[in-house]
Each structure stands twice: as structure tokens, then as C-alpha cells.
Image (cartoon, rainbow, N blue to C red):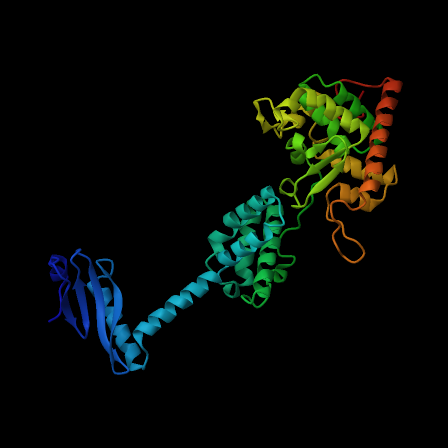
Amino acid sequence: MALTDTQIKNAQPKEKPYKLSDGRGLYIEIQPSGSKYWRLKYRFSAKEKRLAIGVYPRVTLKAARKACSSAKDLLDQGIDPTQAKKDKKIELATAHSNNFEAIALEWHKQQSAKWSVSYTTKVLRAIERDLFPYIGTLPLDQISPPQLLAVFKRIENRGATETAHRVKQITGQVYRYAVATGRAQRDITPDLKGALATHQTKHFPAITEPEKVGKLLCLIDGYEGTSTVRAAMQLAPLVFVRPKELRHAEWAEIDFEIAEWRIPAEKMKMGVDHIVPLSRQAIEILEEQRLLTGHWGGFVFPSVRGPKRPMSDNAILSAFRTMGISKEEMTGHGFRAMARTLLDEVLGERVELVEHQLAHAVKDSLGRAYNRTTHLPQRKLMMQRWADYLDQLRAQQTRNNIITHIFRNNLGAV
């Protein structure tokens, strides 16, 4: 006799498990704990077997009967329902391991060994925000170019054109990884060439004219804010590292005996150790700063809030504003463009030495990346010539007596 939902609800547990039959081999088993399990008894290859269908009430009577009918259909086709269920689980597990999110996370984990911590976090945040919600559950070979374009357009439409291009680039890397590991046929991102708005690269504002550089150096020397911020600004043009690398400099990384600052890979954008040769002028600045913060043994340029935190990323920008230098004229990142331009165009230094000192990816004629010590003696000489040249620009402005304490609109104003 067929069961009713009321019978199942009212079935009480006993000391031992017992069954209530619904017919066609379908029954519900009531456990002493009170749990109620749907089962289907059937024969396959002359053997009696049991198929687990689910737990009541999550699996209702109607759903259990539907599952029973589906299992009977498989039996009619000569297929074992239990084996079919196992195969389905394997298929789902395989599909999950081959969806975009799983492969992207696998790729990200592999690549993170080469990246800095900050860049690793930046990439993960981008794919979690802009890709996973829309294509994360899909196998790569089931994603079409129009679907992918819709994802990128969503980013572009919020005014983040640069981010859209960057996410497209990341997506292409995930696809190529999937192709290499046999989980995708091809990278479809090239199909979208020209489909996104062209990103106009915005360069960081920088002062690159020698006369204006001299004025800037004199203004920095006369800065009346905190001595730590002034020291950071004085050191910045001499080492031309990225602002974050400067702010996070630690005394343990500075070797005064060999005049080198060795920045560990985890602090670098490219995830590779970097050596900054220190000129005589840079050492003098650091020696003076060591009297102020060296006893703490932590950051060279600590925050005003305490020695356990680095200087604020807004400290140098605020100092520029105090001196009357607008954000359209100069930023902390601008010291890099300043050095790149003048070392090449004025001092005639070898471009590969400059690029290597900027911690850019530099390769030899065979396409091999240089390591951190490549051309180190030559780079040390270059860094000293650069420091001496900056002294000349500063001295020239002092001699001409055209130093002004406030830039009105640009560095050319007197």
C-alpha cells in the first residue's frame, strides 16, 4: 500500500531500524535516532542492491517517487542506478575542478610564488570581484567570446577602462594555463581584440627639466615639516624606487659597510629581490635618519603614529602640497620618471642599467632575465654619478639665487 506524507511524518523511532514500504521497491527506513532515509531495493545482474535516494523531509515523498521512476528507467536500459549515481558525482566533481574559478585559483596560486604579496592580493581581488560572480562556475570551453565580452564591458561601463583591459589580460593567462594543462581547447580572449575602448595610459606627473629639478631639490631641503618626511623626500630622487618600497624600507635591509639597500622580493612589484646601490649622499641622509629612528630597529621612515607602522602613503604628497607643488606637477612616483629621463638624455647612461635599477624586467640577448646582481659595479658608479649630478643642479639654483619657497602654479613660476 502506498505511503502518505502523514504516515511518514508520524512514524516514530524504535529501538531498531524499521521500514515503511511505498511499493516498486521504494521504502523509507526510520532509524532509532529519528532520521528517515529513502531507499530503493532493486536487482541488477542477478544481485539485490540498494540505492540511497536521500533524507526525509529534505527529499519529499513526491521527489522520492520521481527518483524511483528514474532509477527504473535506467534499469530498463540495462544501467545500474547506483553506478550511474557514482558516475554523476565524478562528473560533477570533474566539472567543478574544471570551471573557471577552480582553474583561475590554481593558476593564481602557481603565479603567486613569483609575485609580491601586494600584487598577489591585487590580482586575487580583481578576479574575485570582476570574474567569479559571472563566469566562475562555467567550464572554460563553455564560455563564449560574447559572454566574456559582456563581463569586460560591465567593468568598462563603470568607467574602469584600464581595469577592464587588465582583467582581460588576466583572463587570457588563465586560459593559456588551462590549455597547457589540458582543460581548455584554446584561449578565446584574442577574439575580443578591439572590442574594448582603448585605454589611454596616464603617466605619473614628473619634473624632468634640469632647472626645475634643481628648484625642487632646494625646496625639499628647505621643507619645514617633520625631519622624517624631509629625509624621505631627500632620499627619493637618489634611489628612485617606488613610493611604497621607500616607505617600507627597514634598517635591517640597509648595509652601510657596502653601501647597499637590499629589498626582499616580497616587497617588490615583480616579486624579485632588488639591490639599490647607495651613493655617498644617500648614506649621509640615512646616517642622519638613523640617529632619529635607528634605535627602534624597524622602519627607516616610520609613521608619526608609532614606529611599528611605515610612513603614510600620503606623507610626501602632502609635503608637496605644503610646498606649493600641485599633483599635476609632481608625485612621489615622479622621481622614477625624473631619473629615467635625465640618466638617459642628459648623462647618457646605458638604458639597460637604468631599467635594471628601476627594477623593470630586463632581459639579455637570449631572452634571459637578469638577476639582481647583474652589472652591480656599473650600477654603483651610475648611482654615484646621478647623485653628483643632482648636487650640481641644486648648487646651480643656489648660486643663481632663484630659489622660491612657494610654487604658484608650476615649477617655472618665481
